[in-house]
Image 1 (cartoon, rainbow, N blue to C red):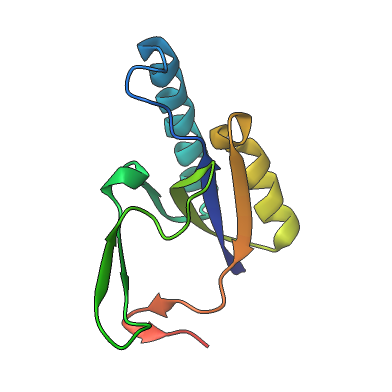
Image 2 (cartoon, rainbow, N blue to C red):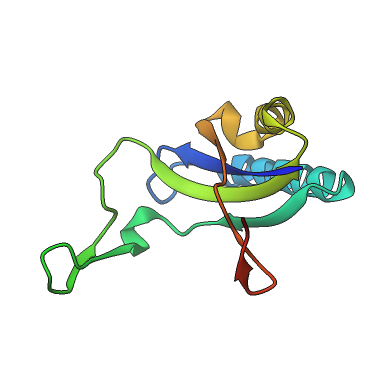
Length: 124
């Protein structure tokens, strides 16, 4: 088994830009998707993020603390959420990404994890 992050990227709509019934339909689709991941025994975690306007970016690159409001990069699409799954390999991860509702209106980046904290220790 191998851990993958499914990183959901999408345009950020303005308040009220998406009709309430469309939001409800996608919420239902995400509930079903998460349930399917859980039933398959591959879901490790999932988070939907607040809009990028809630972001604060921290760096010490200059040797001093710098805090910036907003995301690090100004892009057309923002990171909207993440699913962490544990599957047999890249084909299985791609298959789950294809089923993700976010692929219908944005992109799903499939990235294997290099290491993770498991039971308080970094994995090897």
